[in-house]
Image (cartoon, rainbow, N blue to C red; front, side, top):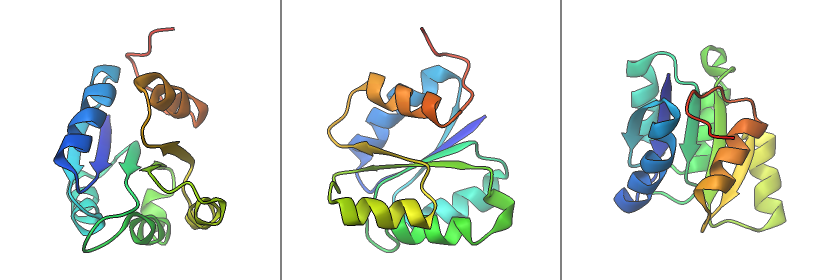
Length: 127
């Protein structure tokens, strides 16, 4: 199972990797949405993408729109991991196809709960 982490912050990618990898995922990383699309094309099946909103080159919202415009990724779950807390922004992302939100800063438990909520099957959940 692949999880794709897209964030322009290397530190944030490491934090997310440290939470998601023990759940049984192989991790792919990208520094912006354009790199994320390249990863998707190369990897084939990705179960879940954790994507930041504010990034250079291609932001998270543009990435979500590009992914949702391609039927081959319609089953992939997407979680926006962001500092954007404005309700209008959240609504835009949900309308674009995000499955769930995680607001920075967050705890591992919050992220894991959100993954469970959207039905992401992982082997390493500790209940």
